[in-house]
Image (cartoon, rainbow, N blue to C red; front, top):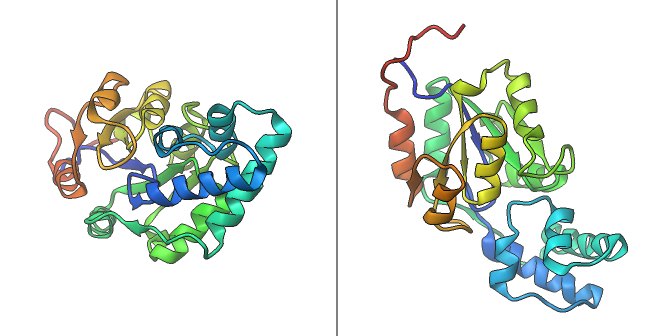
Length: 226
């Protein structure tokens, strides 16, 4: 079958995992711990998708010392047991297992830290489905294209045979900056209008619809991958 895309690069938080509420709570508790004004939920949501340090700097407008203080407090809450665990979105596991079984190369490009992503992959039991992953503490933060470019290099894949799936404008901007197609899911942090305005070709309200679209055969493309 002539696949629509060989390589599918997923964001994690807000795309595959329903972690928005947990991230917001951790950010608010970290602010309280650091003695800075606690942001409202809408403001905290809007920076989800950036690397942690970049998100904190944008959200609080503080210097490096406070960024590090807030980041350390955030990590302690995220990796601890004082905040309710996040679950995968409905249809995520079935979609990933099916795409993997059909031979797609799956990857994760996330604003999470390596420690945070490894914890999530271990808890979800889905780590073996991904051929490569990149985190914000290993590369520049989104929307810089570095993590996506490294994924394509590791997989020896060309940009035109890859697609990014994300819930934030930062995911879509990263894809555009790397010359890669992108689609959005609207159960995360940013609305369809915002995702489309930043370059997403389609938006999906749930992963079942995304799954069906990804499985549709491409038209007008050769099976050869030269």
